[in-house]
Length: 322
View 1 (tube, rainbow, N blue to C red):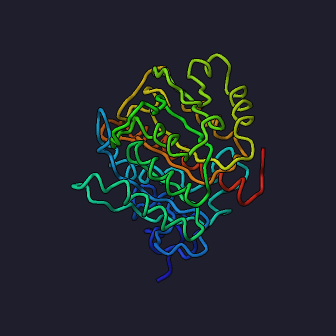
View 2: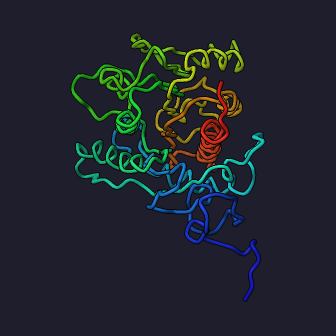
View 3: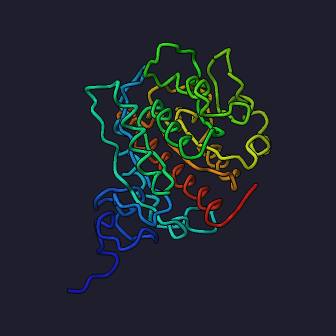
């Protein structure tokens, strides 16, 4: 019996290639990010997407353990066409696999950071870039440790309502202290890093270049992008995007919402303005579907990740630089 392409389902399992756009109804089929093929074999893969469903470092509302699943489900709405306004299709340019989720023993939380780090290291050993879906923001610390082991100290491109540099000398597993540890461990170079959308008080910036949300509202996206490009230059960059960088009017499904943040258009315009950034690793964190409304936070997360992929393709496949 012959079938046309519109009847294809479960492309996450049956797709023959790691690249290309697959036609599949958004309401059916096995979920993967943007219908990418599931695979534990990363041979020849440019970029692997993995979920880190960990949320026990959250200080307020939990639920981000459901973030990877929610983002994957929402991504079916963006999987069928070239991502606007990019003039190329990143799903055609890159070979992308969905690697599935990181496994860990939630009953032994002290071991989780090492399990996350080992999960990412095993993927990076194949010379495949990794894009992680959280999970709470603590996961960025073991993710950075894994990436620095391969690439050396990195610049951080950090979107957030919070600096996440609160002092901690007790080794807590906490989603507000990761970048305090990352600086002290020499993982990131704060003077060559930026934090965007901040709107909570922390009197110790630890040397980061901080662009507060109010400053962005007053000075505009184009001015911000120019300043960020000057700071990052051609350095290797790790991108981490906490969804609470976006105002809760646009992203209510998160654990620690703060009013006065970026709008969805602002966040997307900033990312697209950074074409040429030398990304070597990425994560999108703090999407909490239990607090979402009409899946709008998960949907925004999917659109942001789609732009992450395009940014990676622009630099590493098309050779674009600032």
